[in-house]
Image 1 (cartoon, one colour):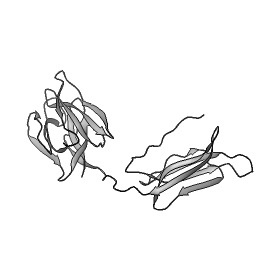
Image 2 (cartoon, one colour):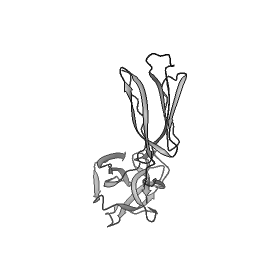
Image 3 (cartoon, one colour):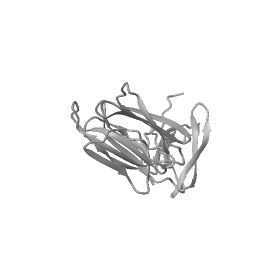
Image 4 (tube, one colour):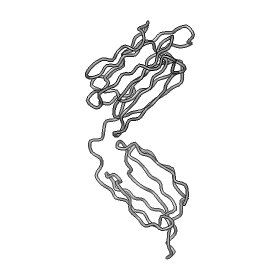
Length: 238
């Protein structure tokens, strides 16, 4: 038994379109599958698993998606086959990453895309927003992301959403260059939902911003941080 190696798809936005492989030459004795390579609807190709042999095969059905496998095995994979079905219908629309607002300092962070936002935590420091973290929903599970920035002794203030009926539609904020920081720092954040507006976290300052896209909801956050939050941005879907 060898090592197990994984190839993960962005389901349901991505599916396998074909499988290429190779096996032992047809010598009349037992054969083994020696290599497998997977291609997806997003144009990605997996690593080749195993060593390619001279006898090759391809499983592909034009205009259809691979939906399952079958085969035969003993100590190794002796044979493999594939089932194909209709292309997925009503795929969720791809998320769009809106540009982050704020200063240029700090390191990039990106939580990615989820089904929705459950809870927001905002920590404040002497100069502005010092840290943020989030709880998201994904496939009926709660996923925690953060801490981005540096948590202070003041801890976090929280804003909890009534997911799935409530979702964030916009983020308001301010940033400014403050003493002790080489780049602008986020000094205030406020979140608007389809039902209400959060408390204001932090203080207004020189430069304000609004991040939203009409008819879209926010399903993830990204930005830049050091010991403070320098930039704040969002991922949205229709």
